[in-house]
Length: 116
Image (tube, rainbow, N blue to C red; front, side):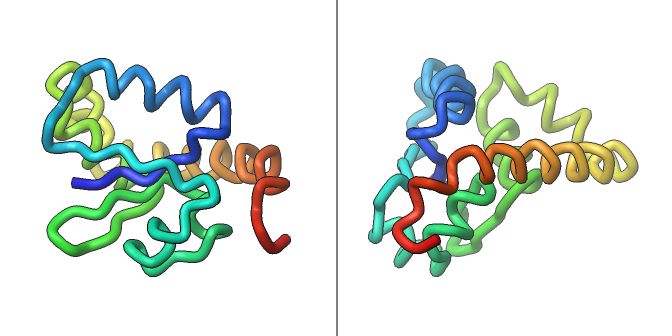
């Protein structure tokens, strides 16, 4: 499983660093900052990659809240988040909150885009 994240965003980096400490061999962490290979691998442009977290698993791309569920499902310490936030109504609320936070992080970090 590949996780595409923005390592140049201090908030994003801090969160992903927590997950990296768990040393899960099945997760390949990929920084999307100026990474054309990530764009090719996901079939997403730099704006799309910067806008949300993305996960590639079994050839499929997941983004946003769904991507986080996959990350948490694969890290034993955080699996409780997966079990809780995957519940239908709770997932809807989580998705909405994620989109709001992700939008503000995108606005804060969009200066790093190659093309604005």
